[in-house]
Image (cartoon, rainbow, N blue to C red; front, side, top):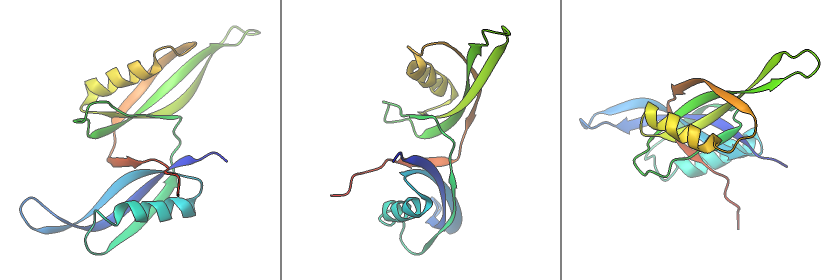
Length: 147
């Protein structure tokens, strides 16, 4: 069975830099087999980082072809890139585009573009970047085998 990515949102009270408590909602990505497993794993991952009560407010499938993680430790932002692969229909000669979403970790927009280009290097066939947008995703939790 293949795992897939789920976008999970959590709402909790966060202590701001000013010392005040503020209700915030944060978004994370979780690698899981199902919605149930995504929620369970997400709660396990978040529990050590949040003091007090928190609520998982939303879980939805993320249509991602790939996640590109940065080697730079300062890369703390996530960008969603839409990439179109270009093929030619041999019968009609028409150009066909197939789009896929890629999540890219980077320090800024230029770095996201550089990381995406680097990850796509060696890709067979033509492709173009349609869009790159910054997301609100805080972190990505990969699947870990249970012992």
